Length: 276
Length: 328
Image (tube, rainbow over all chains, first blue to last red; front, side, top):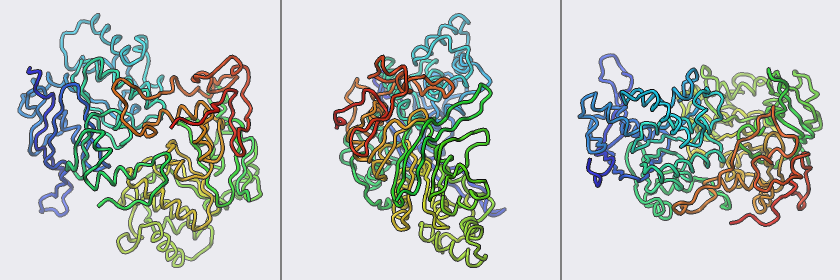
């Protein structure tokens, strides 16, 4: 592994979803969810992808983790083209990239204990982990997200939304990945708890050198956690840049419209003009 | 003139573990044509307050106190009388427009329903009025025929239809419970603009429930901050923001990423409020926020702090409130 190479490189990704046929013998129409999207993520860097619903940001997250197959383009993770790898190699690569989902209620199996949920990626992706080590890894991971090792024997319903999101983060961390893809990971949380989870994500990044691909519609959140921001609209990248520069001087009219629409304390509301 | 006056509202929910106090001594006034914001995190009782006003509490809930609307106590009214008020004088916009609309009825018919039911209009007349209302809220013909179904519209358009339904019978009070939380940021701004416009046009009073402090700042004249089923701070919106006297209000403000107008320097963290909202079944005897409060002292623990006035129209339920201005 070359340590100077970017952790993740996405090149000219294009992905079409097939829509239902309009007529029996007509070819089915397509919806272009991603249109020539490229990005680079260095080790330890945090890139936010923002956009409205339907902009393709979740599709991008899923494609980066090889959960969707694009029509064109490459995803290179740790120097390896994920769509060119044989299935067993891809499986081995998966432990380096994990995902945290939005809904901490829907993403945890209610019938499994927390220890099982957290260890599932370990069981699936790393063979031959002894049970003593497995237990130690579960305890260590739970502690690293601010939970207790004894929480492994509880069920998800015994936890609040913020704690459940910690469980989801622990589950992503247990294989010691280099990349975490967080798809709206704090959107469902209350403000005070959201701040706790965002702080945890920042701590983990400093401690473990993680990289984040942070998918969000919330520009205020993005400003706090990302080094760079990429704005997607209808599957296309409309603007990309360092977070502070992009917030201070957005170049694209769409980015400006997005920023202007965010309600702010101390700033009287202006009539919104529709995005061009 | 006071349109809605809520006094000592307590709502208790029967649970298998015993009665859970959901709201305790909630009180506020809303003038005709005024606007009041209700802020707080989930579980603090914002939506229960709205449901209590609408008479839509769950069956296991028991409400005491008074909710006086246009001179009559809604809690004492029989269901039949409430039915005549709901959708007529009292209207509500819910968070999730897809579940608030009936998926198998056209948007025109859904807007016309209230007109036929409450005002006794005939089908043709009601539908003509519905078309006008849809036009007013920005879902105009011919682009959006009244014969469309909810699934053919986007989230923002659906929320506009819900607003048209709420406005149909010319209500005096509009309750909007997180009306924009499910929407994209650009539609959110447009919907808030629309609500402000229609409220001003029709002289409606607006009760706006939200977790977003910036939305309250921009859209309401007065506000109350709720925590664990109680009102902890109240006042004119700008006065409350200038002071943020209750440690919970201040904590909420500091934790909002949008309150910061710059990038956090490396190594610095957001101001999170430690801990969790107490479970209604295990609320402490003293101040409900004491367990998470950086200013808590021994005198916070024995009893609930009474509300005290800091300035005309600004009150806080705290023994050790912040007296200095909110840091910029």
